[in-house]
Image (cartoon, rainbow over all chains, first blue to last red; front, side, top):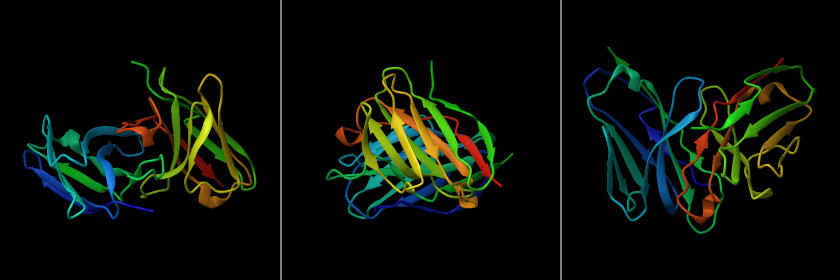
Length: 113
Length: 116
């Protein structure tokens, strides 16, 4: 089954800096989504990018998708302490695969105040 | 706005016992998904239901079963619990079967199961 892999697994930066997280996947996709999870809490949807899109913005978030490299990146600009969380990319397979999103391993982001 | 409601939030069981988790999706969401997340792990898809029928199956053990009821709430039943079943169990819901479109999942806060 297809799986996303996040890179890096952990990232610690100073407040105000930008944070970039990468995700790679293995099979064709319909879309790729990014979710955020605070420790021990539920996942919250951040942004969705379709397979025919290359870049998408939402507030301080910028997502890119390169289907030729099967990779995506999530950029959080002007980070805040409240951005501390784990970030997961997730995909649906195209071609009628599983209903469920397949999540990657996640990047644990720590914003130092 | 109403969110996905899961109960119980915490559950402690002994090995070989059974446990039932409940999920109430967002009103008018007809699709429910169950995920299992072990400590430090990514969420793993277990099973999904669309319009009260099982839609897809992931890595759900044979000891587990689930169903979606007429009011669209879902229950995950876990029997012969093992230590390795200790995890966070998330329910999510969406409007429409995921495979039919670019659906965003709304997750509940999760039920933390501890097996002793």
